[in-house]
Image 1 (tube, one colour):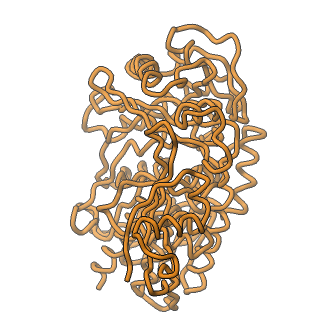
Image 2 (cartoon, one colour):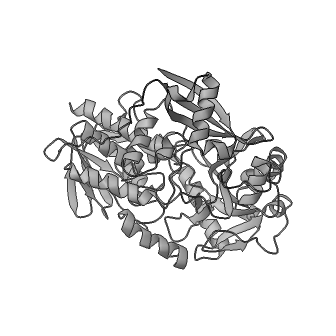
Image 3 (spheres, helix red, strand yellow):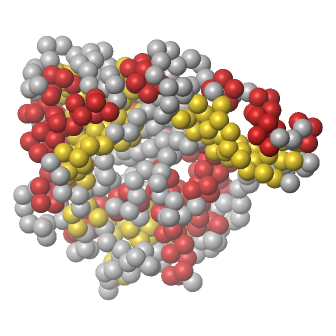
Length: 515
């Protein structure tokens, strides 16, 4: 017999299997000898009360032993099967490839960037010397933007597909089983490259193809039918193409326009990345001066309505680092990431304001007006920073009070930060709302509104500023047969898990079409 129950434990007890076992027995009022095993289904931290506790949803196996779950990977040779082109080796592209193999199709993955090992060298050049490889950086390369910008797996995309399938695939390739039970699963930038490498090896061993350093330069379209692409010095043809290039592949949007393929502008969000000492966040969220060894660095999620517009935090990185995520030499784009242990002394989060179509001058029919607006802000941030990826920055209270920061607090942004009046970088409808929201956040979370916090600009690649339309049922572009827009770059995902799910959904759509 199996009973599903919830137990509540203090942090040190939640880490002890014997205490979990005893509490399960007490909750069900049965003898310990009858409970053969306890399986944790979900684990979350509850910090709403004065004392922080863990809530554990568990299966209690009474008078029977739990069968160990075997997370296996399906292998089959698809080298002689029908080919499917997949542009981009981020989570959408890689999971599309895995699903194609499962369905008996041969994925041919084309990636402009390098594999994870080679890519790491280009990231070192970005951080140390401010040199950007336009095809290999924090956004482009094997694994996509998530590989070297945190690896958070939290998502609300329950209706889009099988989240557990995605998480179990990561576990099968080396991730800890903790991601299957934690309410906010996280792999960490230091662990993801090895997992991505394992997934790539599986795809190749099954007879698929992956081409790195292979940028798509043209599309082969005939009679509104996508026939293939030209990438590098090769021509690739297939009956279906999954376009999963991510939110920063601006050249792809211009390529689509050149072929008169319908694309459209969409809203996105713009703001800054805010960093606090982690201990300030821990004290606010855990209500104590020392969280101890049994609690992880705390996170937060904040939102405020200001002048009929949402101002919100997202992509929060406890124990994290602010990273330079520009894809061109003359722009500043920042993001955040955390290692698996989340043991850095700072906590950072994107804090942004929604940008709607009516906020930006230009015709509503101009698909590039939001992208151009995004690019202008990034270039201005570069100019104000003074070059070499130095980012404009300001202390939080100084920013709200329109006061220049005479100095900046110690922070994690390696290329360096320059004290700046951020109102000279951000559009007025953005900075005015931020100036109202930050003190309001401080009222919601004690200690948040402080001059020990630094605002680093700009956080601009929150999502794609364009959408590539597709049919709701077939997932195919309404104008170009055989083209399946996918993931963040097409405007249909936001994060690793939702992108992976969208990739799998597109693979299934291609399978239905060509069969």
